[in-house]
Image (cartoon, rainbow, N blue to C red; front, side):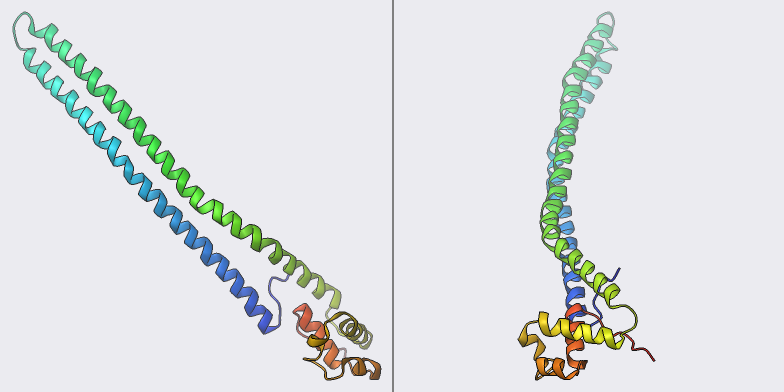
Length: 205
């Protein structure tokens, strides 16, 4: 597999595209964490309610302990106060714990969505073209082979002359069709290799 072209200009462009996508993904991950942390801070509200419920329960228990020392009626009355504290304060704490868990779940969900949805949108637009470019580059390298024979030079020159836009050919040859007719293949071969993103193959000795 060839992930990057050999030609410097195309290679820089491909690397820059990959780096930009990576930076965007890292930025989205950072934003997702920020959203998660911001929503998670709301858990302080049910946590405070839970602390209030615990204080209420402790208050009833302290009162029950104090009343429990009264002769005759202290025991039953103390138990009743402790049960009341467990019922009131305990329910408040249970509700607060449930609310805190819901807030944390919401923070996890929103943080994940903040990262995943834009990341999927970015990758769905970038990856297909990037993978297609890798496949084309790999296929071109295999088709060209390690050795550029005269016959293959002639074939590449014809492919360039017949397949590439004229403005692109003119960057490598002032007379591309004349070069093809005269057997001057260097400029046309260079155009074909540049189009494929490959450096020239070795010529047979």
